[in-house]
Image 1 (cartoon, rainbow, N blue to C red):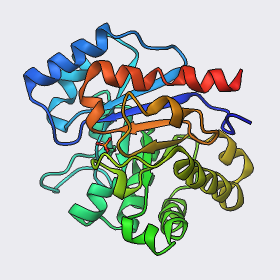
Image 2 (cartoon, rainbow, N blue to C red):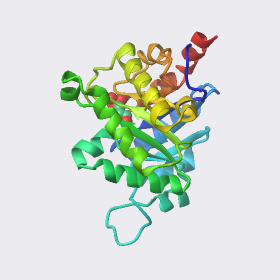
Image 3 (cartoon, protein in one colour):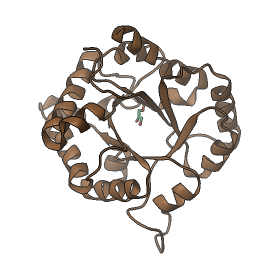
Length: 259
Ligand SMILES: O=C(CO)COP(=O)(O)O
C-alpha cells in the first residue's frame, strides 16, 4: 500500500528566525510565480513580524502558520502572542513542540500540550512536532522518546482532526544529514501504529504524518514515496521559492506510486 493515510499531502515551510522585509518579499514573489500541484496543502511559517506582510502579498492558495503561541488567552505576558491574536490576524496554523523550542528555549511536554490544546480550541490547525536526539537514537530510544512526546499531546488534546504530526529527528535538522527513506518510514509507521492503539483507528488513518530534517529538492521525491510519509516540514530549503515548490510537487512522486 503506497499511502496509509487517507488525507492530502501537506508541506510546511518553517522559515524560523530568518528573513527581512526585502528577502521575504522576494521569497513570496517566487512562490506566487511557481507552478504548484493542486493535490497538496501548503503552509508557510514566517517570523511573527512578517506574518501580515506575507498574508497580504501571497496570491497562491498557501496558508500561514505561526511558529509558536501562548498557552492561553492574552494579557500580561510580555513577549507572547496568543492563539486568539493569530486567528484575528488571519493565521490558520501554528507549529508546536519544535525541537528548537524544546531544546534551545526549554519548553516542556506539559507546556506544549497546553499550548496545542488552547490553539485547537481557537480553531487553529496544529503542526505537532516530535523527534529524538542523536543520543536517543544511538541508545535505541527513538520510539520511546517519540511516544512520550505524542502522549503529552494526547494528555492535553481530545480532538485530533486539526493536528498534523511532524516527525523531525533532531540529528537531521539543519545538518544536511537527512534520515534515509527507510529510517523515516520506520518511525512514521510506528507513529501511525501508536495513533491506532492509543487514540483510534480513524485518527491513525486520517492524520497526516510529515517528515522534517534536511529535506530538499533532490531528496523529497524518494521520501514522498514511502507509504507513511504524508508530506514535509522544511527549514532551510523553504527559504528558496523554487526549491520549496519542487518539494511541494513531490506529491506527484507519491501519486505515481499510488497509481
Ligand atoms: O526544523 C526543520 C523544520 O521545522 C527542518 O529544518 P531543515 O530543513 O533546515 O533541516
